[in-house]
Image 1 (tube, rainbow, N blue to C red):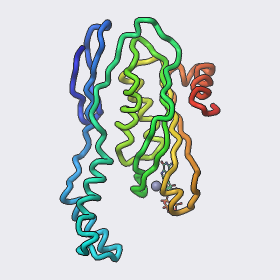
Image 2 (image 1 turned 45 degrees about the vertical axis):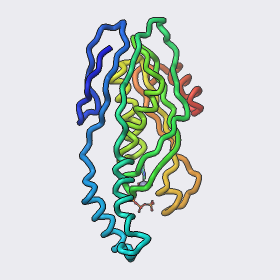
Image 3 (image 1 turned 90 degrees about the horizontal axis):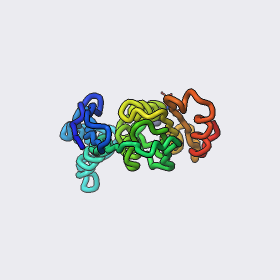
Image 4 (image 1 turned 90 degrees about the vertical axis):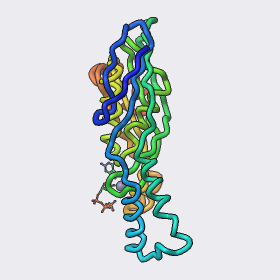
Length: 216
Ligand SMILES: Nc1nc2c(ncn2[C@@H]2O[C@H](COP(=O)(O)OP(=O)(O)OP(=O)(O)O)[C@@H](O)[C@H]2O)c(=O)[nH]1
Ligand SMILES: [Zn+2]
């Protein structure tokens, strides 16, 4: 077993250890730190600009709460990307369905939320199952568009797990589309990103979309 600390910019780093062992890659997503005091001042200004009395008893603590809430929403938790040798040569799809996703739309700073279905065709290694949800969170806790989030999860898994293929589907409702603007309540946006055999081989692709519950 080995462990290494990820490079902040890429959110990961490579690990070298014998192939018959469990491997661990420490994943730390580095981003510009949130300046809590500046964020707090900005929320006070926003409340004032919205015609509210930021000094009132009710709102006095709101800037601090909002600043901390955004800091939390933009900071993925650290985790170990634990992989195991694929000693049995398992070569069918592994798919985690209905992984909860919540992120912030970079256009309106409003949440979008829904589920992700993440699958891969194992190569030499298999992944600790919880890690598929961890990788979704790694990129979801950011200012995002759904297409980029979907592709980042697929690309990252392809790069770090080196499976024969990866597929990611995200279905999400954007509050900027349901609470305001067009007010299309209940409308869900579906995005997908495929890599390797799931992209190239029509049968694998079809099987992935069938297991994910999406018509491909
Ligand atoms: N492609 C994509 N668009 C998104 C996502 N989240 C929000 N948007 C869209 O970003 C667009 C921003 O368009 P603008 O016309 O600049 O913003 P707006 O005037 O608030 O648009 P409306 O929402 O139509 O009122 C809107 O159409 C949003 O629905 C996303 O994850 N992916
Ligand atoms: Zn939006």
